[in-house]
Image (cartoon, rainbow, N blue to C red; front, side, top):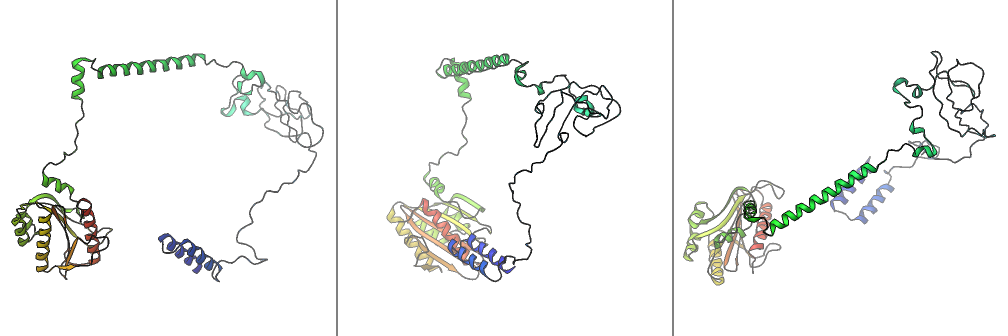
Length: 392
């Protein structure tokens, strides 16, 4: 079964996009032409499956069948059956084969059934031989009943159009219902139109006012810090989720800012900072529980924002973070990328100015278990923040 395994592996490679369609066809042909591919059965050797069925058109053999072979008769049974043939001009006959056709062979008639005698049963014999008992659908036996002597299902020719119930009354009823529905719809439309134009009086207007639906959507923030908070992207994890505008002292307590960083913000009269933070569980992006924080520092001018970026960069490098000059893929050059990696913890940080605001993205991993997963988490979070706070 080696060739089947090779074909299965080739199909998987094509489905995963590791090979092109042309490579797939070429390698498949090579496998099927190899010595391990399935071979055709040799001449004289029996194939494992029977040959497919084929229709063969042949002219029918002309044989003269006896007249009694295809005859079907329903006759009255008011006399006991005898062995002598009794021709019945009202019999229904079907004759096949060659020879001269009976002029009555295509005539179909219904014969009033008569209660059968107690003896006898279904019999088959030569043409015109009497049948011991009529079929059950003519006598009502075994749950069958013919009902009327001339049922409508055997009517032919003009009889089909006789005794048909007239549908005129039903059509009239349907027309009346349609007219009533139309009138009701028109009346309802006129009623609401008049009330909407003020014709319904003060009571109708009061009812319309009381039935006005209330919206449950959250109102848009008006405070500048709240607006910045709403613009921040969601953190990469939902565990221990925090979304708030916090004082710098609280950020120091949460260990999201060092005291030295808080002092730099206080010197620029930045006392409150919008931030979002959370931790992710192992997911499709990686098995590590990375922690995310995104915050924005509002300043008074673009020049002040650039100054704060330089001050924070110098502080971070003085405290062990390493500046990576080469940017990560699809990252603007103005995004300052710094990191600190050791056995106990790993930290990736992005810092940039966006107009009058300074944005900082922090992703850390404690303990450090997979830097590749940490790098992916950092890049996704920075790209999300750049949508609301683009870098120059």
